[in-house]
Every structure is written in C-alpha cells, then in structure tokens.
Image 1 (cartoon, rainbow, N blue to C red):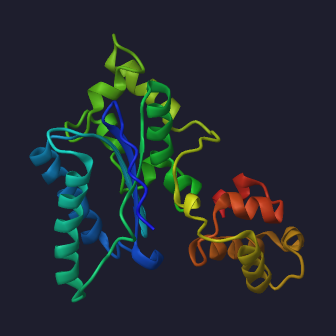
Image 2: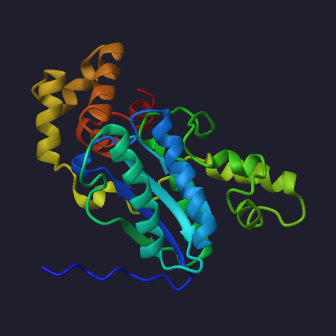
Length: 254
C-alpha cells in the first residue's frame, strides 16, 4: 500500500516523534545523548529551523520545531543521516536505527503549541523514569530557565508574561510542571501492545491470576513489579492504570 501523505502544517510548526527500530534502545550512554543534541543544534544553524523543545528517551524521542529555509523532510533526513552514520561506526553496526519514517503532527494554534511543549517536557515523568522535569538531563528545559539561545526561549516566554522575564519564567515553570491529562501524538498510536498482550504479561510477571490482584501485594513488591512492567516490558502508565486499577500517581512514582 502507498504511504499516506504527511499532513502539512500551515504554521510550519511540527511535533515530531521517532523510535528505535524494533523498539530497541537508541541512546545507550551519555555520549549518544550528547551526540544527538550536538547534531540537532548543528542542523538548526544549517537548516535555520527554530527549536522549541526536545526530549530524548532511551528508545524514542520527541521534537517541537518550526521549519526554516528547508522543509521538514530534509531537516529530518539531515539529522538522522548524520547521527546514524556516527552511531553505526561507533557500535560497529549497519542498517537502520529508527523505525519507519518519523511521525509528525502539525501544530496550528497557540493552545496546542503549549500543550505539546508541556507534553514533551513531561514525557520522562509520565513514563515513570524521573520524579521532576528538572531532574531529567535530556531535554532543553534548562534553556528556558537560563535564557539559552539554543532554543527559542524568548518566543515561548512571551506567552507567559510580556513585561517581566522573571515573571514569565516563573509562570512557565508553573505551567510546564502542572499535572494534566494532555493528549498528543505518541507511541500509543502504533498500538504497540494490545490489552490482551499486556494482561498476559502482568499475570506472568506478577504471578497473579487477575490483574487487580496486584493491589493486594505488599507495597514494596507491588512497586518492583510495576517498575518492571514499565521499564522492561514497555507497558504504558495508562495501560497499567486501566488494567490493574492502581492510581496513576502510584504507578508514576514506582
């Protein structure tokens, strides 16, 4: 079947997501993360795109950017081609690193722009691998606090206060860290795992007959199982919450 044409953004702003082929880990060590960020910034200057947010997870990543003098497809081909060439040489491998072509969605209004921005920065929190946004190293969140010119901080902070930068940063921090039920493009659109598959894993890992039985386990043991379900088997927080009845906050902290 022919590929569905990519939906174009009238604003030129896109939320982009890529993941490792076969769900494999992309970033294995600190050098890998740093190299991708370096590549992202290198082509920001060459392609003249505006970078608003990025978040690098171990097996996938999110970007929020606006096209410059080159179209999105060219931008992503440059970034991915450069990084994969370096990565394959480092690890002595050949072939693809990212699964399929990258996914993207247009961002056409200010409200959704801020929603996507927050969603990207909160990705590690909702995945349960960090307690606070500021504690996760592989986003550009700090660029907004330190007024770095690597990101379009001035553009974003104007949404929060046009007269006082200090007040704008304070309002930005409050907004980005606020609890929410934001829905954006994510891995779930690919139906990574059905509920039937997830139920089978929960029962096998937790050694229980019914998924709700996990609530009866001792807290320490329950939390260990939840962590394994998230980190080793890639069950989403929402899926675990839905199937086991355990509160989302408990799952995030486990």
